[in-house]
Length: 73
Image (tube, rainbow, N blue to C red):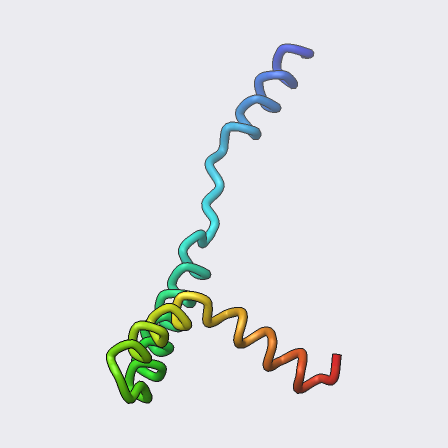
């Protein structure tokens, strides 16, 4: 009887669980593309375009800053 319980416990724990792991990467990637289009599109010179690309890499920081400023925190 004990062996059967151990067997069932082992089988239960071996089940493969899948989680949507690429969702945040997809959101970040789409945001990166959109930020590149925006920042580079508004750049007047080449170096401002380079700066726009660097800003696009860290666009979530700008988003969080604007949200905290909006909510008055």
